Image (tube, rainbow, N blue to C red; front, side, top):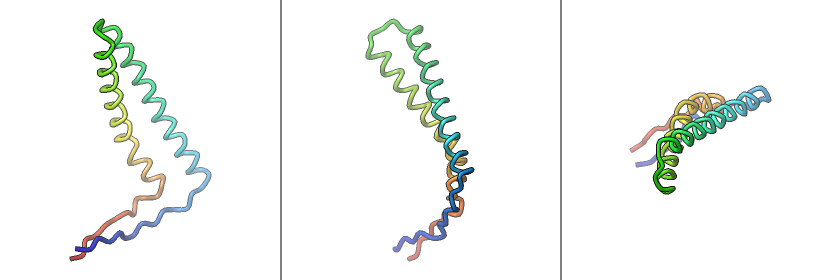
Length: 92
């Protein structure tokens, strides 16, 4: 079985696309920071247990936040990078 990668043609980068991509990443970063702060406040108020429990809960919420942000922004970022014509095929 051979694996071929076909029709990957990224578009030329322009300053407008680069600026839009930068703002998309900044938006994702701001959303993640906001989620982290809200989760920190909720965890600190809800639990008065040991520090390790708080740390594990915060890490779990951070991981969920990262996955959510990447899921929401992945299609837009992929489109801006010009990877919409990406396809693969298998040849036996």
